Amino acid sequence: MIRVGTCGFCESHSRYYRDFDAIEIQQTFYRILREKTLERWRKEAPEEFTFAIKAFQGVTHPPNSPTWRRSNVRPGKEVGLLRPTSDVFHFWRLTLREAEILGARFILIQLPRSFKESEESFANAERFFETAERGDFEIAVELRGWSERGIKHFVRDFDVIDVTDPLVRVPLHRGETSYYRLHGRYEDGRIIYRYSYSDEELGKIRERVLDWNRAESFVFFNNSDMCRDAKRLKATLNDR
Image (cartoon, rainbow, N blue to C red; front, side, top):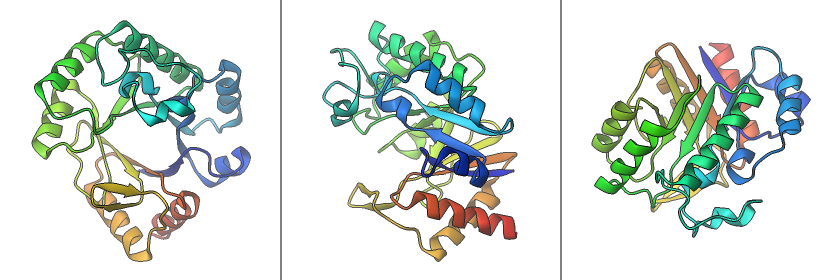
């Protein structure tokens, strides 16, 4: 089974629920959302619809990250990078609560490049995952700038799903579920989000996801033309 969606609602909610069967909620990364908002989204969605949410940036991003400019929370000095601090665990509990209200299946932990492949990062992650509750959620982790050896070690030790771009590398799996994120074009270590995927690229994505598929795969687009590209990929999968 392959489900395709976008990172955030790219059209009206009612239309999105007709066009797609999964979404990764981005707002939960930038802001603490009202419970009424999350309850409404769950009620609006079809019963079989799959929600993933992105963990709040207080769990992953340090206070000097520019992403905090869009937040409705003032960061403390000890937020981010999976550091086992009271602030990080507080924001993780808020993320869990949001996931519960939404009825989410996945929580995405997207770590910044400042979360280096180092003994300190592994130590922080070990203490975080030893302490943090998971509930019934599947935890997906996107690491940036890490070696395949480091990613494999991280995925295995902390029992998380390896999130990757299928045009970049094969996922180093945990379990039977694949989780893909497509941000756009990579250039000199930067991501160019203002991007539309070519037919050839979508064909490669389709074939790789099919070839690497175990039990199920989730593919989320996060580029500027994500709605159109997700629909195009979904159409090719439906044709098959």
